Length: 178
Image 1 (tube, one colour):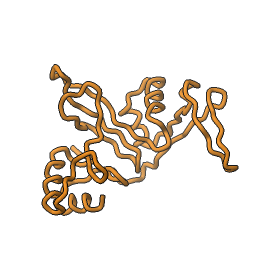
Image 2 (cartoon, helix red, strand yellow):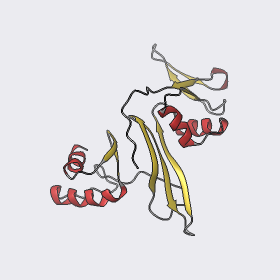
Image 3 (tube, rainbow, N blue to C red):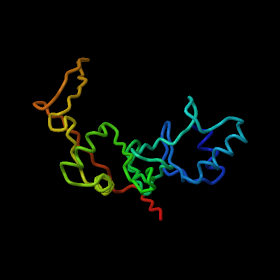
Image 4 (spheres, helix red, strand yellow):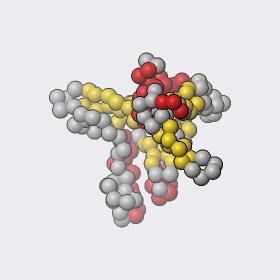
């Protein structure tokens, strides 16, 4: 990861988000970075093998390249990308690539549905410091596990509704990309 990040920085390619095993860069810079990586390290950057990189976006029905048209990076492992591509009939299709550490994606989708809020608006609220509470049981339709201090594990479901409250500070640096 360090080779890739420092090479991107050396080539003045913007890295909008990065953590242990992933990074967000401009779509058009992926090919530039791959070419420079091959030249410098004599290895392929793009692939599915260990140590290789690939686009992590998945969008049902996509037949063309998938890219993000809007993103919010709130904290490590807390971000959303609004995806866009084209289907087999060349129609534009959209979706979301969401991460929120400690809250499964199905719980994010459930929250959006029951609160009648779009995925991007949910992340905008978190970005703006609004506290959100996620039901990890999805109203009792999903069970999970709690690891206790006594080194035991117990299951929870509807009668043991477990929620996670999430709130981020608003006094962090904000970057708007136009």
